[in-house]
Length: 161
Image 1 (tube, rainbow, N blue to C red):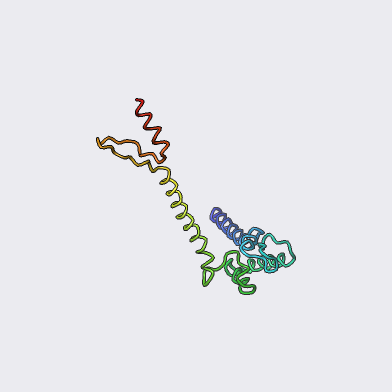
Image 2 (image 1 turned 120 degrees about the vertical axis):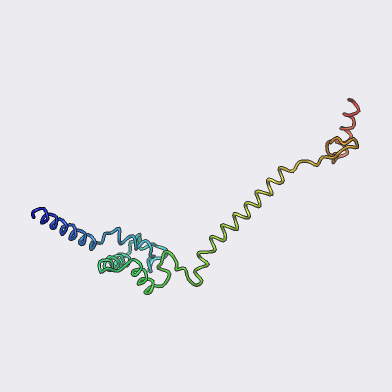
């Protein structure tokens, strides 16, 4: 009997402790949402880093909404409804905003393809051997000289051998 009462009290204590821990909202909880929002007043300033009075009020509002049980998405939707898409750190993936998501990927792919073709051209330019011309006997010889001066020197060297 004592053991079952002890277990029952222990379970109630754990249950109450868990319920009270869920109701507490920490600064980390608030900042996790605030860093996903931009200050509607300051330009390009994340809400979690902005030091203005307005941003402090908005962080307090986020804390209040979290304490009332609002989800992260509900809070972001509330801010988006009131201030527009510009408050979202990540633009919604709909309508014309798809360009913001697809253009960087397309540019990286295009740049990679262009760079690979450029490297192939460089490699092809370095690895092309000089053409080999066969003599009448079928033995490969050096390619014909392009300059008349070089041709005369090579003739003299062959004659001296």
